Image 1: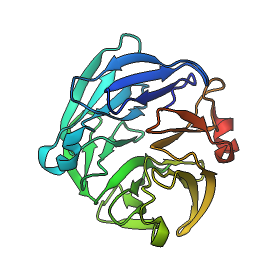
Image 2: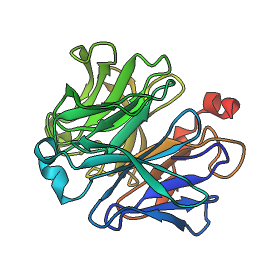
Image 3: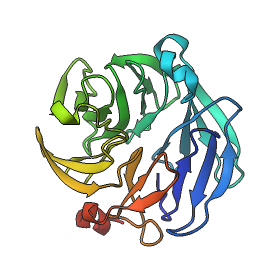
Length: 261
């Protein structure tokens, strides 16, 4: 995730660290470490600027619906202090935050999608969708988008008002069945931008069933747009992967997001 000052934050899955890049090309700085055994998951900002850190993306995630190891903490980026505010989720591999501060959390190895209210009341079984991964909310807050990584791979959106209402935006079949779509984001037109782990691509869904390839050879775990006028700036699309590298995807540049700063 990128903050308002254009600084990029990432988690270290194996070491449970939260790292910050001040600008592209800069050496990352470790600003916090999760408790031992708690794999680093997703990152997200609440409307007030509070950084949320998901955990539970360790070996327990394979039985996440049963063990409920997922937790969400706030991180003071100045002091590095982590404060757990909710637990009992299947996982928090993906997180999306609504304008009122509501948080949605996913687990690609499970079926439960969790919800955290603005007052930090957890509903770990708010919805159920197999292998939901990543999370992004439409601009009007009515739809939650996520990838389907391992089970019936593709991309879906689900109604926030009624999670029984779903729409598949892309079904990966044939040679693409094992592409493993991962942590997606949305552009200024609410089009999903999706990285894949196995085929190593980044693509954008133009309309249901139709995708446009943005990058080949640089896929990865998660994509995010920048913010602010410097560093990881607004409108620019960035990818972070299991290889520990961060790349910009120039073909994903969004001029509308760039004007929003």
